[in-house]
Amino acid sequence: MDVTTTQVNAKTGKKTKSNIRSFVTHLEGAIDGAVLEARTLQTTHADRPIWVRYDLDAIRASVQPSDFSSRENSLWRYRELLPVEDPSRIVSLGEGMTPLLHCPSLGSHIGVENLWIKDESQLPTGSFKARGLSMAVTMAAHFDITRIAIPTAGNAGGALAAYAARAGMEAYVFMPSDTPIVNQFEAAQFGARVYLVDGLITDCGAIIRSGTEHTGWFDLSTLKEPYRIEGKKTMGLEIAEQFGWSLPDVIVYPTGGGTGLIGMWKAFKELRELGWLVTDTMPRMVAVQSTGCCPVVRAFDEGERFCSFFDNAETIAKGLRVPAAVGDFMILDAIRESGGTAVAVEESRLLSLMKNTASRTGISTGPETAACTGAIEILRSQSWIQPGERVVLFNCGALQKNVELFERNLPVLDPSKTVDWDAILA
Ligand SMILES: *Cc1c(COP(=O)(O)O)cnc(C)c1O
Image (cartoon, rainbow, N blue to C red; front, side):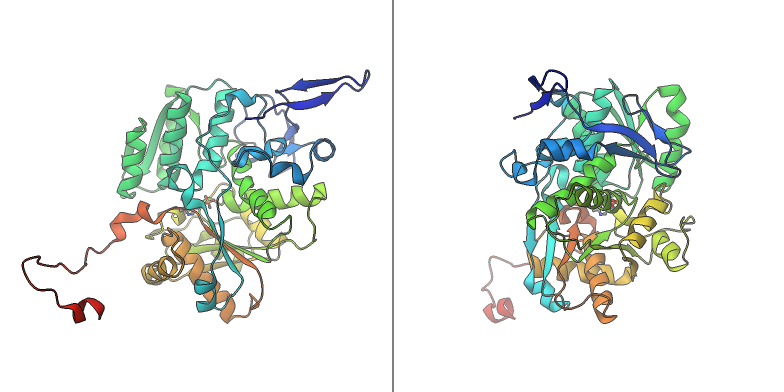
């Protein structure tokens, strides 16, 4: 991997190759803009998330968009826009640069010809959680952390366990007891200590917080440290590069804790400030949830900046089962700034939408993505999305994670009997 950058000494003009440069200037409290030190370990500020800020002028002077395409095919190609100081300590499983697939069959079925799916199911451990956790574990390693803990609705636990295994860290994963079996299996196989909790992800988070003093572990909860967003940001950088440094009209995103939506919107704003976009259009960001758990939709509709706790959260789309998100205002700000919206799809429709989405695309799509298909139908019927608009739907996790949703109702053949071919073709 090519990891060196050239630094020019301002006094002597002498160029030196360096592999320990990052363009991070400082961190910033998202709730109040407070300036925080970047080179010490930070968690939250005023109990709210923290942004990573960069010297965009220096980045603009040292790299241009066309440089990225010749680099390695992973999210690490965007290293100038990432917080890592010591590239030799990157904890990677080859994550990033997922396919952006045109989906005309599904598109014409739901009235959006120009429909694209960003297929995050092809990432390590089968979900886009790999991006954020690769970054968060890399930065934890940078700060010499050796014991980490995470609450998860499913996929984050598997991804964290994999990256912790890669980094040689001790990982503790807490998940609701009805989390999909594949998530339990993968986290345990990667050597994490996995605990099931009779409750929701918020209860898992509370357990981790109450154990911090005793265990000394570092809490990698969604948005409780600054770097997961930077990993998720690379989804936005990739779409921009894949569309030739222009952006789509609409992004439809299944929203739980919201890191992906928040991270992408940050990426788009950084790209605009860098002057790297060939057109000025910014995408309208759409947060999609299920009627079984839709705190963001409710807050958006009510004009609130913060969400209230969503009681009795239940949905087959486990990635969306987040009744309270610490970055709620960041999600809602991004939606509103972008001229976007928030849509809840009827929970009872998710299974049929899931079959429809997978069978019309060949992409490994689960219930969260199914909700997005339903949301596009709704937004088309309201003419909120125009027919020719370029729409990108995020497939954040693989179908295979959801084996419990399979009804096991396939017809069975008896090999000793003659086959009824008409029945086969029926
Ligand atoms: C985590 C997850 C989501 C929600 O992502 P956020 O960025 O946390 O809102 C959606 N779908 C799947 C499959 C997930 O694993």
